[in-house]
Image 1 (cartoon, rainbow, N blue to C red):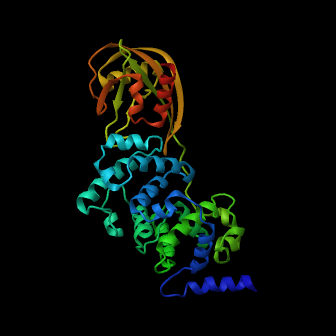
Image 2: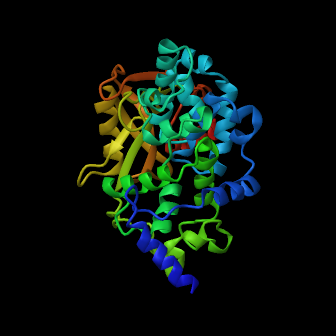
Image 3: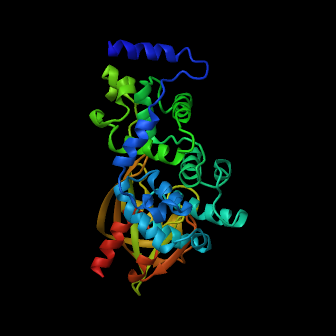
Length: 377
């Protein structure tokens, strides 16, 4: 009898003039969140009332898991405790503080947005619309910060919320498509209880992160299981529906640790736009067809800096994955032969002492080479 009643409710939902959705038990969700939410730094009283700290945490959490994000959160806020401190900093110091967290465009955008916000308002904006004016801020960040910090009644839609909503609705549409995301967002927006946007958004994200897991969801612990269509149909693992990912390409990269007679090492700063923009690295690049690793390293040094080198022993092999491709980085010792370093394929070039390398922000793959150099020094 109970199962048939649910089916009638779903059928009745289609007759509603204002919505096609089964209502979510938002009160039950909020009660669950109050009892089960994790003790995270940005939820503690001193940070949870600080819009700047909420913003930093949300930017970090966009593409970093919570456990990994926590030490970077503390490190970044120790270095830049306020919006004013971040706005006054130079971008190199911001990138250095972000080092290891990855997706460095987030750090560059944080810095640029801090300067714009200080210049335009003297503080962070309070409205969803104004947040969207800042670089690096899309609908998710705008909704998250404006709702959590300022009570704006805007529902968030991140990966966790997409998973929860798609299972509640047993949504068969591809969640990578805008039309499906719009439907899911309309659903969570419709169920947002007035005056409780901060708790509601955090509760939905918490539910997705701790209970409504991608694989083997803990449905027995879910406060929304009675209204979940996928749970009723026992099809939880079929949602969310996603198109198959294309094969991830792999590239072999060769780089050179070029040393002068005085022991200084040549490093290059990447151009500010694009992948890893503004970070420092050892000159190098992709192998061309039929090219040896040693030849590629020497060619890339010449093309990037105008310097000719003699390639020596291989000192490291580093495998690393980015969001859309993977690399194997082969690092070689190299002896400076001739030429005056110039920024031909990069933004800046510098000769630095080995013990100065730690002052510069390097991509994660290059950091392992830095560690090798310092351990051998």
